Amino acid sequence: MCFLIKTPPNASMVMAASSELENNSCDWFWSLSLAWAIAQLGWIAGPAVMFLFSFVIYYTSSLLADCYRSGDPVSGKRNYTYMDAV
Image (cartoon, rainbow, N blue to C red; front, side, top):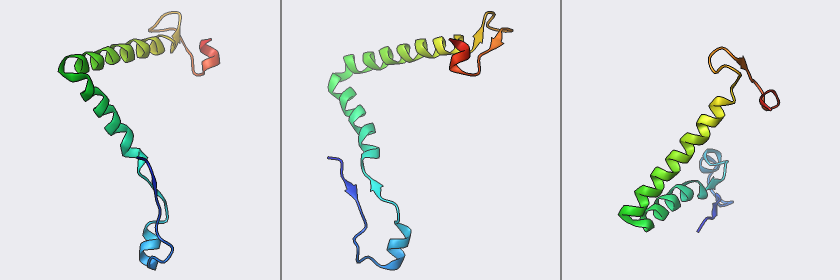
C-alpha cells in the first residue's frame, strides 16, 4: 500500500525543478491506519482504548516531569541531561 512516487525522467524543467524531492506516500498512511484500527474496535471498545492510551501517556509524562528536578519538585536541582537524573 505504501509506495514511492518519483517524477518521470522526461518531465519538463519546471516540473522537475518544483518536485526535486521524492514524495513519500507513507506519511499519511499511518494516521489513516490508526483511525481504521480504532474504528474496527467499535463504539464501546474504541473510545475505551483511546482513554486507556491517554491515561498511560499522562502517567508517563508525569514520571518524566518528576525526573526534571531532584529532591524538592519546586526548588530542587534541575537535571538538564539524562545522566544528571540517573
